[in-house]
Amino acid sequence: MTDLADRVALITGSSSGLGLAAARALARRGARLAINSRGGDKLERACQALTEEGAEVVAIPADVRRVDELEDLVSEVEEQLGPVDILVANGGGPRVKPAAELDDTDWEEAIPLALLFVPRLCNFVLPGMRRRGWGRIIAINSVSARQPIPRLPCPTRCGQRFSAI
Image 1 (cartoon, helix red, strand yellow):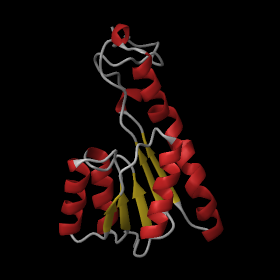
Image 2: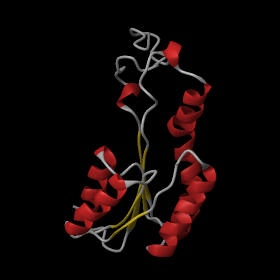
Image 3: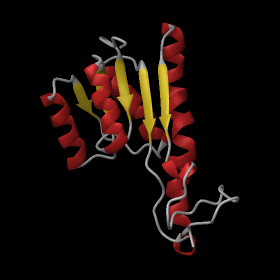
């Protein structure tokens, strides 16, 4: 196993699920963690649990759909822990409901999360990774990209049953 002591890992969407699992795995290898979600009790509970498990961790709330909050998120990580060496870009999926019930707000929230936040966040961490000659980026996307979820709009899966209606 790789020793990640003194490496800083930023994990988005890490108050639960795959993001929290990634944070735990990185902590076991010695990485210092910045965990992120939009905030709230779940993020604080995740931070407390990771701390109790021996991780060095800070919780930084930010909405990854907003480019200004992404920049602030990276700046806050660098201020508290140092430059980001490892980025785990984990975003949630769109709202689950029939396509006919989706409105403009649903789409306006889903597109930045599904398509834009990963390259935007990479733009903030890649220059430093290149200067230091070391960095890792892991992007986690919805399982619906491979397997449609009932009632979830999935128009890119044209060859399969359209499960959103």
